[in-house]
Amino acid sequence: MLQTFRFPSTTSRRPRSLTKFKKLKASELRMILLFGFVVFKNVLKSKYYDHFIKLVVAVHLSEFREVTLTMTNNIRILLREFLIDFPNLYGIRHNQQVVHSLDHIGQTVIDYGPLTSYSTFHFENILGDIYNFYKYLTTVY
Image 1 (cartoon, rainbow, N blue to C red):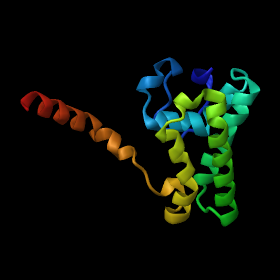
Image 2 (image 1 turned 120 degrees about the vertical axis):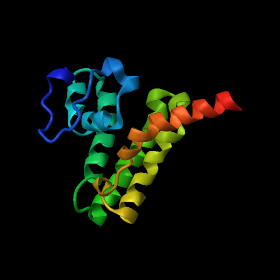
Image 3 (image 1 turned 60 degrees about the vertical axis):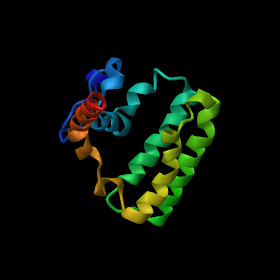
Image 4 (image 1 turned 90 degrees about the vertical axis):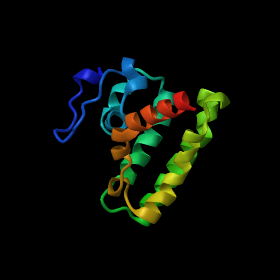
C-alpha cells in the first residue's frame, strides 16, 4: 500500500517497502510519518492507529513554519499521552530511551524553533565513514 501512495513532489527520497524497515533512512521514515501514515488506518487495530496519530499530529505541529505557544502545549500533551500509553500497548520492554526522547520535542521547539529549522540528516552521509573508522580501530588495537 505504501508503494502506491502518492508522496508530495518535493519528496527527495520515496520510502522503500516496509519489508526493508531496518534499512530505511531517517528521511524515508519521516515521509512515512508525515504523509504515509494513512496507509496504516486499515492495517492497525484502532487503539494502535489512534496512538500512532498522536505522534503524527505532534510531529506535524512541530514542523509548522511558525509554532505558537498553544501549538507547543498541544505537542507536549500529545507526546505525553503517547508516552503514557506506549508501554501499555507495546510492553515495557520496548519502552526505550529513544521513545522517551519524544518527551523533549515540545521544549526543543520552544528553544530552537520548528523541527524544519534544523536537521541531523546530514550526519547520515558520514555514518559509513565513522563505522569504517571504528572497524579499523578495533582491528588495529
